[in-house]
Length: 274
Image (tube, rainbow, N blue to C red; front, side, top):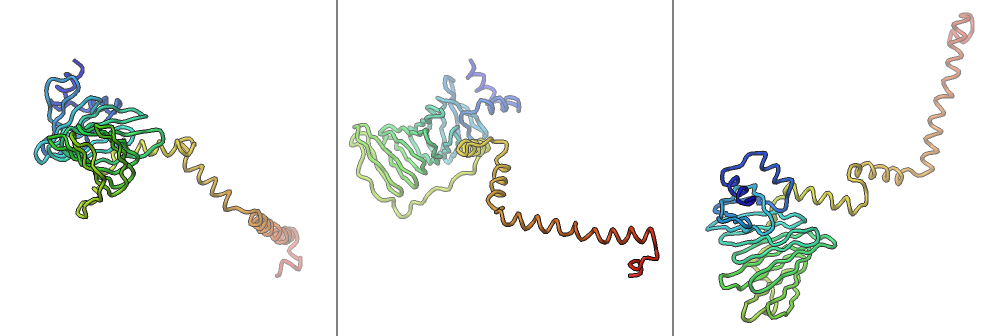
């Protein structure tokens, strides 16, 4: 019933209040949808059209049609682009592990590396373990997969329990009948895909991760940097020189003050005519 209600509201164009509730329970979000893009919510009876921003949960499926495109940000550092005629499933989202599935079509991914966190991509012919990577995978209707690696590392396990490691700018073909072939160099006409812009969720997560790695309170990162800089740039000899220059003007003022006081008392003083 819950998912049916969400589907109905999405189809009717739910108001700002509903969108805010979805943001608070963020798991994943379609932040770009062009052409034909549909979603089948977990447990829902029918597909619904997607208009960005569109929130996703574990078990939701995204389908792009002819000339369709969708860009998705998944919590904990996974950014996905789906091209036309692609069927994609959000399998699991947690702080330790994200798992997605590409049943057919093509996916490009930008996975942010973070200690203790893994990202896996499932296809009909293989499972891929990702480590801080830019990659692309294309799956045919027959379930054959072609993996392209641009940065980072991939470890691909086929359905025959064979594992192949890829290094940047390598390609690997995997079939259901023959398993993984030998890695080969990427063709010269294949270039690294351009990364989508960062979403507000991605920016917030990156900031939180940096603060956690620094081990400093999030509310005072800049103040800490300024204090450290002052300590490093203020050697002892400079401090002594500054003290001397401050004391010198104070001493030079005293004679002038005394002359003025004498003139106020007696205008016949010789100093008053200077």
